[in-house]
Amino acid sequence: MILLSVFIFIIGLAVGSFLNVCIHRLPRGESLLYPPSHCPECGSSIRWFDNIPLISYLLLKGRCRSCKRHISFQYPLVEAITGFLFLSAFLPYSLNSSIISLFPLLGDLLLISFLIPIFFIDLKHQIIPNSLSYPLIISGVIFGFLQQTLLSSAVGAGIGGGTLFLIYFIASRVLKEEGMGAGDIKLSIGIGAFLGGEKTLLFLFLSFIIGGIFAAIFLLLHLKERRERIPFAPFLTGSALISIFFGDKLICLYLNSFFR
Image 1 (tube, rainbow, N blue to C red):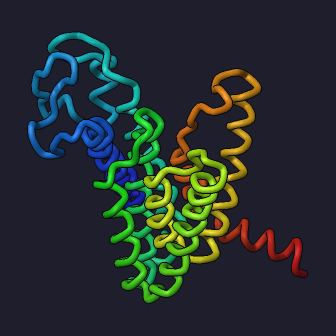
Image 2 (cartoon, rainbow, N blue to C red):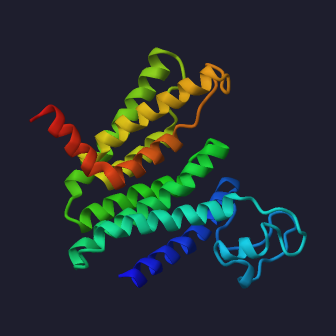
Image 3 (cartoon, rainbow, N blue to C red):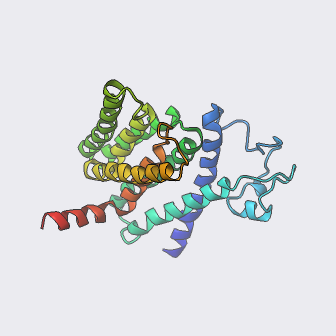
């Protein structure tokens, strides 16, 4: 089991390396396959031994071998986060190796793999590429079918997308302000399809609570102006991760507290 856990962590590191490519190229409309990995500063190709997740960054001391310019710390950060989240998602299933638990685990890992690039892309560029949001929705429906929870996936997608669309409609038509972007709506549909009905309610609740707290902090510290747009996808993705790892416990805690 220890060896399997190490293997899952290494897989996460490798996936994180690919997610870095997505984060860098998708907002620019570039291909994920061509050209091969290269330094964004000098354009020189990165050889395989300089492309080992985490290890190469440490050996090169965060610099390109060719031009000696600094490599963004985002690269090892994304790899480490992905490896840690993959391992964290695997551990609860490690006590049950039956085929029944395989699809939920794969669903969690796939959802994590979508959430990480969306978080960083929206944080930096304030966009959510359709090349991520549409496959996210389709994958959520497919996994709902494979786990025989298609109805729950449909309810989650409806709640997630419907809630944010309602906010968008009221803000744009009634208040004449931009309250929610179309990318956020599609993201919530996809996350809801993966999480199902109950966890989608929790995920939305956490998103608005955490988003509201950070928005208040930004305004109090004058980091943002009142009408300046704050990317919402980081709060959606962060709340989705909380729902993946702690959703069942938080829902049980809520039910035990108010419906005993």
